[in-house]
Amino acid sequence: MTSSLQTATTALDLTPWLTLAALLWIGHRLVLIAAFPWAPCRGCNGRGRFFRGENWRPCRRCKGSGRRVRLGRRIWHWATNGDRT
Image (cartoon, rainbow, N blue to C red):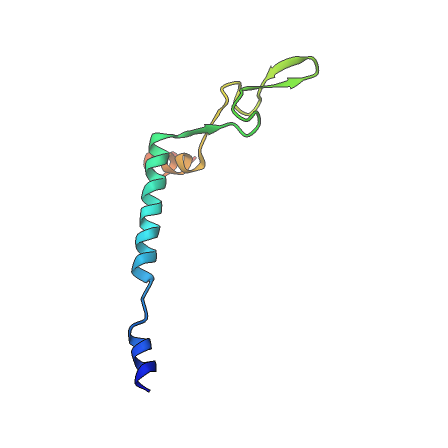
């Protein structure tokens, strides 16, 4: 009887550790969004162009820049600037 009681009282509570891990992950993502707001374009894989027919054409998604704004950066901009149109 005492062994089961001891096992129940010495069990680890993972809630603080999971909370700490979640906060660290969120902080890490916020730093990445602030430092690197751009990601490679999904349409051209960051090249800015693609081969169509016999010629290279600029990508329609990124207009030839090869970059796109990350989703987290869009959310950050929406939340901080209030541009909610």
